[in-house]
Image 1 (cartoon, rainbow, N blue to C red):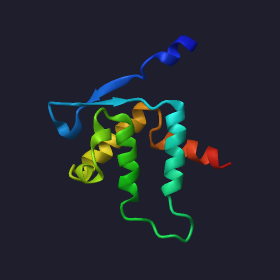
Image 2 (tube, rainbow, N blue to C red; image 1 turned 90 degrees about the horizontal axis):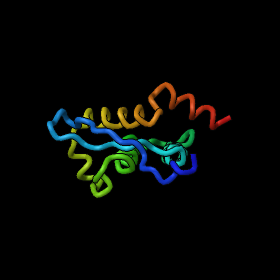
Image 3 (tube, helix red, strand yellow; image 1 turned 60 degrees about the horizontal axis):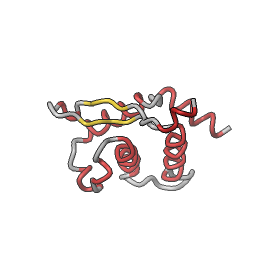
Length: 114
């Protein structure tokens, strides 16, 4: 199994904004999943604190930059120029592809809190 550590993580094409050109999304490693969960926890307001209006977008942008080829070069303003619905679908696809779809993700988060 050690020889696989040098392998590139699996990726796939995804038709973003229903365009003929697609984007390449990469699976998250286990460490990247842990880093993502820690990031989400760090931007989630504590009880009694107000939530920043952009906090949901910031989480999506973090994930998109980590997994979509070339997205790490995009600023927040550039990412905000895409339709919200398409960004949300892309984020859902990334989570699903990495084994973190909504139901599983909630289970994982609650397990880490115990």
